[in-house]
Structures are given as C-alpha cells and as structure tokens.
Image (tube, rainbow, N blue to C red; front, side, top):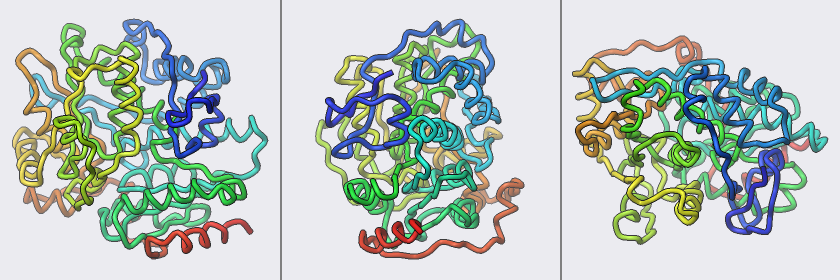
Length: 429
C-alpha cells in the first residue's frame, strides 16, 4: 500500500518506509488515500490474532507476506482485550492487560516488530526513537523496544504531570531507554519532538524516528481491537454499537474511525475529552482555537493540540466519515469523579480516563443502542487518585509492584531544544 503525506501529497511512501521515517516532509502525517474492502462478517468469526493478521495484511499490502504479518501480530498481541459488562447495555473494552497495563502496548509492540522489518528492508544499522508521552506512551514504547538491538529510545515527559507509577514503568529501565523529565507541559514536550524532526542534519545523522501515534504502524495496530470489541457483542446488537473513546492526541479515535471506514458496524464514535477541549469546541463552532493546556485527573489526555487530528480531517474530506457519525464531548473534573463513583456503585472499578469516556457515553446513548467505552489503563496506574476518589484501597498488579520502589533514572531538563540536541548527540558515540 502507498501512503501519502497529508501536508505534501507528492511524498508517497510504502508502509515500511513510513514506519522508518515516522514523520514526513513539513511534519506531515502519512496516511492511505485508499482503503481495502474487508469481509467483516467472516473476520468477526475469527480469533483476535487471526483476525488482526488479516486486517493488517490487507492494510500493508504485498510488502510483507501474510506469514510475516501473522508472526508480527502473534509477537505483539500476546494478551487479550476483553469486553467487560458494566450494565445490560454498556461494557468496557479493557485494553490494559499488556505488560505496561495500557492500550498503547498494542501499538508499541507492533511498531517494534514493524521497525525490525523496516531496518532489514533498508539495511539500517541503528535507529534513534524520540517520542513524547503524556502518560502511557512512554511505558509502552520503552518496554516494546527495551534492549532491542540497533534501537536507542529517548522519551520526553512533563515533569510532575504524570502519575508516579506511570513514570516508574519507563524511567527505571535504563540501558537503551533514556528518559528526560521536561519542566513544562506535554504540548511543550511534543513541540520539542517536532523541533527534532525539523533538524534535518540531526535526523539524518541519528536516523531519528518517533513512536508516538503519528507513526502509522501504531495507528494500524489500534484498529484491530475495535474489531475485537464488536466481535464480542451479541450478533443481534452489532448494528447499534456506539463507542466512546477517551481522547488526547486522537490516535485512538482515528483508529476507531478507520475501523468504521473498513466496514466495522459502528453506529457512531464519541471523542470524549477532559477540560482540554479543543476538538469539542471546534466541532461545535468550526474554530480551531487551542487553549493553554491545563492539568486534569485524566493526565494522559492533557493535550490541547492533538497531533492526529489532520488524519480525522482527511477522512472527513474524503467523505468516508460523516459529521453525524462522530460526536465530541467534554467532561469536566467534577463529572469525572462522579463517573468513577457511578461505575464503582455498579461494581466496576475504573480510573479517570475511562470515566471520562463513560460519562460522555451515558450522555449520548439512546434506547436500543449498545455502548462501549474504552478502558485505556489499569486503575492501579492511578492508585492515589482512585483510592482518594473512591475511598477504598486497590491492590497493585505485579507489573507495578515490581517497579514501585525502583529509583527513577530520568534526567531533568528545561523545554530547551539546544539542551535536547546535546543529549541526543551524546548517544551517537
């Protein structure tokens, strides 16, 4: 499959080229201009790994064999994505059963597999991944690439603005994982990463890539769990599925929209945001006006300028998604806490990001519809918040217990590109 740079359409690349490059010219995102036709009813009868292999092979095309793609999927998707009932007409798609207890394990691990193929195809000896995280990306990328030969990973995160346990999952690894605590918000971290990609000499010298959801391999991987969600819905309710997505950088929502474009019967999707509500306001009045990012309980969604929105605009421009098939809903801090308590009263313990999605879903769901909200992280990753809001203790899973007392190896820095450039050049020795 050929992918086109949204900003510079003349730049056309293959899937593996897009994986290796990450961002295109003028920081443009790579995106298909055509989509495969899938036999969705047949796919929904398959197992998660078998179905995902078919979907990804269709998207990638003949650049990789079906057997190669299946091998990549088997290595990446080695854990389930169960649909947990909350009420008769609402369920949570639990995407936190991977090694870092967050949905980004799917995309991060598949990207790690794809990058190996891309390096082999172009005979690339070493890649430096530079990425920013508002919470879960850091851990998922760090664990996916930890000790992978030929890869150095540099992760920027807003110091003091992600949960301590989220931070411990990726700042304690060392070896080829380098972590920088930036004295600023996530948008500033993301801006620094963009500066890196504008530095053509540095990009070429270090063969720099990004593992944010701007990388097409991560985005493609995320499409697969939407199919897994619908496959678990009773067949007689599949035409009435409404899915609410906690949205920060909008990669997850974009993947859901692509799943719909590929034929998955999703009645509509809901982009649920916190107080960083650029998209809900834009959806209402047509003005793109990001405000200064504010810190919220759902910190991984504290993004005012979502990088993936141009891909959503591309789907809208191609006429593949209608405005009536997408809602954008803001949920404030008070309703986030209320939503967590409501879920707990129903016997389901959740965390702030999923609670935002649940509240937005409840505002939208109509009689006869079947609602799914995405559980993007294990509640224990936000242990202090969850315990304070719900008033009861939650146990740490083994993955978090193992790092809770480990010392952070992160290096503090200001939001200064010169400082970041020096840190990156120090890796080229």
